[in-house]
Length: 144
Image (tube, rainbow, N blue to C red; front, side, top):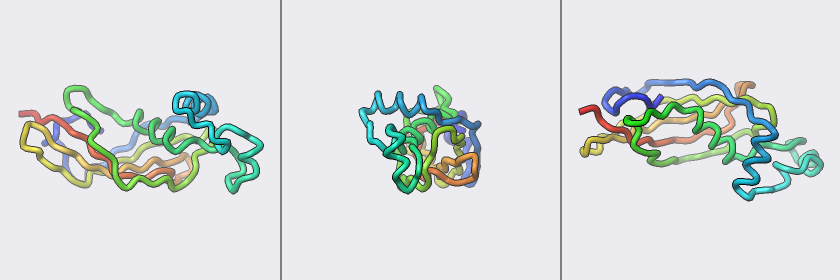
């Protein structure tokens, strides 16, 4: 999605990513990197006695994996500018496949050769459920 210059975007423009399956290895590796070994993610017996009935992926793992599905073109993208209104709506289980849907909501010219694109980001599961919803902001270069 973020493979164009700032002035090439229009409000309402939408994009969908390819899919990515969240695996048990992802959860184990994320636990090790983040230090988050909360038993809902890492203890099968503990998780079986929760409302989820099984282990779930860390919300931040899913958000991180989703960011890797978004096309970010060097030379166009200056930086990730922020995230607002982040909500973890539904759990992602081991072997769920996620996909990112983006819709451009706002364009702000920064007046210095860059602009901020604001987009609604929905991380969807293969079941059609929304796992995460957020508003993301990406700082882009202008072409001229």
